[in-house]
Image 1 (cartoon, rainbow, N blue to C red):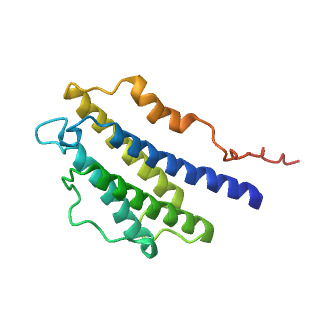
Image 2: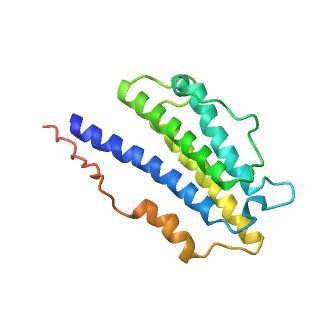
Length: 179
């Protein structure tokens, strides 16, 4: 692949991470009053604890795999933070740490220190992990009798993934034919 094509792929990959974080922030902002306190079951983490866990996991993996981008770890993994503005700030900060770590390792070609065969796998793991907890949050809302309708969820989640932006999508060249 050409260098410009590699750069476009990197931009699209990092954009997917930014979109993932936007979706989490949108979900947080769309919670009803008292939503941070809800949980799916009696001994399950609260929605607040799920969000703070996501923040913590991001930072732990950055610390272990790309320590030059490490940020201070929170004292608790499952913090019961009730201030949604504070949670949003935490998610923004840890998203930047992940983004910078992945971009650095991709651009330098340096391997991850402990986990993952490739920095893209780290990013995909983070997106998968956060999607899993996104589902738990929506389930907790549903169980509490406060389901998020498709009219609400669509624009703040699916549309964020699917709407085109100014980033040029990667143009994949067909493999050359061997003669």
